[in-house]
Length: 362
Image (cartoon, rainbow, N blue to C red):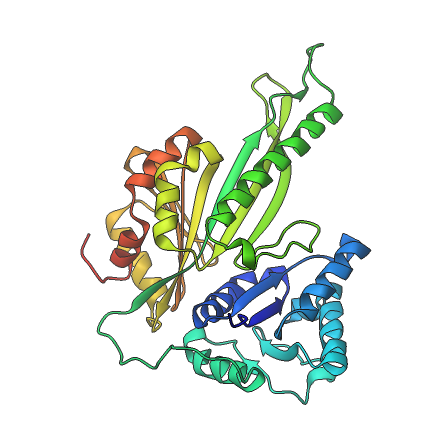
């Protein structure tokens, strides 16, 4: 069986919204994509493991931006990839510019791609560059005739898992727990949620595609983001800890995703989902058009240029909608977590997005 070509993308976390559509497109071309946003402070063991991951990749893509150039970790990965390219012939190093910035001296003479515009405008150039660096690269994607209606591609979905400690600290009562005991429970909750998050990713990744050499198994089309924070307890003046894991799946199988949404969200602890759709070809003025449609149908509860508009549907389903010419981000959640699975099952995200861009009437 022929080995699937792989690409490692190094980038700054602040550029992730730009990177996910690129990773989604490469995945649709048949390239297995690894994305990495670790900090150099993660420890020597992690540094060695990431170096091995880069060494085993066919293509190394570095996403150039001001924040990436300021990242010691991105610079470390770039230097690692350049050294490996010289000593072992791979990975081939391909710079892409995702935000205006000076190209590092070490790669100024290389072929690079300016992707500061739309992904749609850069697709052909990116495909040609990958083909140049990877002669074995083959794709069945063809230039299709323009359609009357734009195509909606589900690039990624983020499922947010939450859980709150049963223990609490603070207040004026003599029987509450210490802050350390609460934090210890929060650590255990993160472990439990991480196990569930890995389970979610295994529904969208083959075990043969996973990287078991890392400190934690890595998935080619998924990433976990973990955090804990203080939350108000039931008793006055008390605090609990809330554990949160965001599971991002790039290029999810929509049929599998719909099965998951329709029956497993409550048992997994999912309380929010954020879908990102690519619009191909881009629609000029889409942000204004979508906002006007929302204004005509709903009460706008909040809005800003970056995060878009907040609206509320009947039965307490809350939506956040943000648009650019080529991308729509739609977040759904409910006030109470126990409502989420039922409402998510009843609500068609794709149908709503189709209405939002004017392809169908409501």
